Image 1 (cartoon, rainbow, N blue to C red):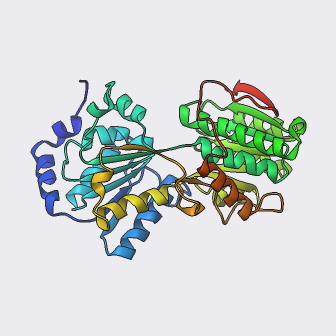
Image 2: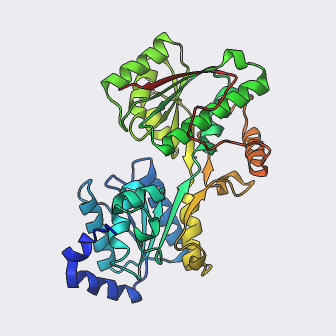
Image 3: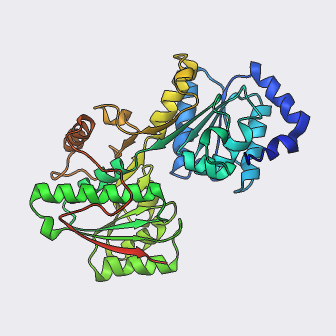
Length: 374
């Protein structure tokens, strides 16, 4: 097994001493991936959910921001949180894979909650094939999300709201991004078929091959919006939304956000630019896991799992994938009640969404698969 527990080697006796002291420690620490708690994304959503739970239930809470964007900096923040007496550590995003691999064996009495953390992230960080060998499964819970479902909701909503020329701008063609994109195509297709306008609806589909915007990707988006007549782009991949938003601002175009409610940051490029956001329910996940630890004594039902979270309720705000109720631009073509009916149909299995990433879904609408922009 190629596990590199360099944290234990570096910390030595001090680390083991901190591990021992956590038996009597209490409280929740949230560690950011290196960004701020005002990023309108994973960090802020996780921070706000942890803070709200802890304030409501009298639990001590603090957050830690690493002093750099590196595994070493994130590990140091976890070490500091444990040294400060926190025995529940919440971490948002796949960048914490190395932290889970290195730290969970060092602190067996600490409970670790990793959001959007897949088995592939963990085995890759540990250099092993068996995920159970990658980290301490006896003190850790990981959640991933069924991205195809909010992708479907966003594509369905866009067409129902009257948009006929859509774009999907993914970051890199990794499984999570592909699931978002293929779900988006399926949703747009089903809505078009229901409306009988499948011959009128088209999707331009491409990846930027990176998770940030730049001049080249903005130029491609300029062509989509200004030349090809694209009306709305689902920007799916970290900071790549900046290129879509910059191009949209020039022509009054629209953008769909991803992972969290991105309306505040996308609308900074143009008022009312954000149609909706295909969200992962980090806040419901935090609520569920902290309740299991502090209120229900059911942590044992979760620890050791890597859950693939999706729809669990007719109450759309309780689901682990969703569209934002407040910022989605509801209209007669697609109202909040229509959205709730769609979710109920998906939950009941009356609407099925394929989660395969092997090939572009078959569709009656036109899908122009353009590959990588760069």
